[in-house]
Image (tube, rainbow, N blue to C red):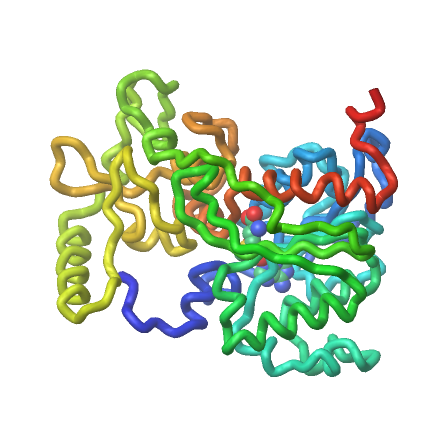
Length: 392
Ligand SMILES: C[S@@+](CC[C@H](N)C(=O)[O-])C[C@H]1O[C@@H](n2cnc3c(N)ncnc32)[C@H](O)[C@@H]1O
């Protein structure tokens, strides 16, 4: 169904993967297997846990600075499948619903990562007194509010640092009250926090503004303001299938030796006509809803978890054809930085529909790597160690 103007906030949150949608499959809880420093820990500079893990975008950033993932929670079975395919050597299972996990069953860790779902209905109603002041505060008033699952884990494990990620609107939601509550809870847990909205477009050709919240248990003078954005501003040409034979053929997304994008990604005439009428109607009414039509020299809008529905936010012009196409899931993997430009290493073991949802819910991997790099000296100081390479 095409997007409707004025769609409810909750619907938008489902779209962004921040609350549970009706079609999401809740998987049974896999058996918990505790990992308290498995093989390979010695080689790692630090340990971290990956909450609301999706397909592991945050994880990739922290592995890139020497971290080892010791615990994963993600309840969607299709995301679990993609995650497992791309991190095949883990010595821990993927845990399901985090609300059912006892904090004591989570191994100790240096860093906590969470692209926590923002449920617009509940956080603002919960004062920090309710959240922290009473023994069972997390379990009653805050029930179902996943941020507080993050908070209860931080409270118990006191990691040296954390990185939380969310949609940009978190800052302004409910006139700023939601974010205020989040900040107060984190500060009351003893952490010094800093945050910044970062656009992924410096690393991949996509406008994707997300808020990153960093906390250190002991103040390490971490400042997001010092983080320099790269000068680069890549264009879509670096992620699109070139279709000229210069790319290895991929039978799932392209056809023939030229690697031309398969016709199945071209919109039907019916849908294309619908989208055009829809755009005209809304333009006439003076609002900006409509599709985003792009070519190799452009930067895409934010890829959403609903991309599989009509693809309207990123439609690719096709030479010699009047009807545009969607991005292929491989192009989405590149757009999110899971694959390098023109790369195809990321394993996509799920249907196109699930793949679009997963990429649309995820993070721009090189943006997370840059945040991790910025945290690294502060983190290593907090942990009292030098990066492996620094010992000479
Ligand atoms: C916005 S996405 C985060 C994506 C992740 N940062 C990535 O790189 O792919 C939120 C994820 O939380 C998962 N989720 C939501 N509620 C959950 C719960 N109670 N327990 C575990 N995972 C949950 C969703 O399935 C979704 O994959």
